[in-house]
Image (tube, rainbow, N blue to C red):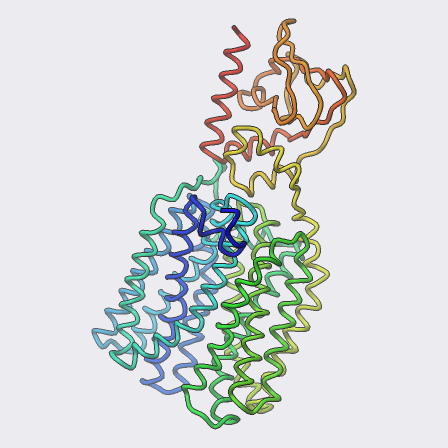
Length: 540
């Protein structure tokens, strides 16, 4: 698998990444197609005013309810949560399909479609919280993030095109039928994913669980700044739906076909940019790359105001889309690195809410700027907003880089311990980040039999003698761990370990060790099996 390009490494995974990515691909089509089909329905029924109202009505409830729905990803195994939310999307699409086929009133259809967008809002947070559990390496995680953003970019262009054709051929009901089927297939793809459930701690439910994502972010200015920066792409996307039509008609003098190309061009740029972003997302420091992507996106949008032909407009917007993809891939990667896994879904749910609010705000501001300025110069304020947010966010986002420093040496050493090797990559990295080094001199007693145990140790270098009841046991060398018996069974130390030579130990605190090991069913089972085998051996 390592021979694959970085962007494609997730395709070689044997952990279910391919199935989850396929399900996400189907989800993104539903995301961009289902709500647009309803907007087109409303446009036919009541003109642009009703269509604009439909866009906002579908987005705002989803933005409010998303954190509560998505919190299921922190209260059950995330594979099961994906099945649940994708099944909910399929059911909601089916209800909207029935409303359309029954020729129900606009209010009924709009109510049913709002259920669609609300259930859709729960999928993306669970998806991006599940990826770190499925990725077997940092490269696989970056690849999965890149391919997810590539799906966003591809469907941001293809979804509206397919929707337009389907509505023209048969009506919006055909789009909802396709969406319902895709939701069912996506849910089936996620059945049987081998993902550990949450810890045994009591979990909050309902709105309390939803608010925990916000509470966790209180005072975390780095994460808040990152969420704001990630919202820029959706703010511009929401505005472009309106700006693209006005610019095509008033400046270029062309029809809706060209408007569709203008709106979709950022999606093509996003598709290209997502694949190129994987290399950047592997770096340790991501804040400058994230903000640079926002500035590039804003510059592409601003450049439209000085153009008067379709070709150059499509090029500069595609370049802007590349910048947006760069920001999304690196931004999501940094958020995954820096956020506690126990609340990761809820934090991504907050991000989903802010992005939907951003899209709604863009759709509201675009007509305002068109009226106050012109269809051409209305692009400029959005580019300036992007640049301003990027500049203000850079200093704060740097804090996340400092918090999410990767420790490759420590991670690799922990991976050499058999039961720790079964842990997900993000857990190993979290253990490595919290672990400390201890240098010992020859003759130093590291742990003494009968004393309480508060740490787990992995030998980084040197040789360590083991003594049980005065009887020498096999020595410990590099890559071997000790101290887990006392921690797993809550008993005193069962052996005395003394440095036979100068050496170095990686020390993991009891709380961090138990949180990581007991959070993985396989790791916990193997750790207890090894501990029991050692106890039995020592008794013999």
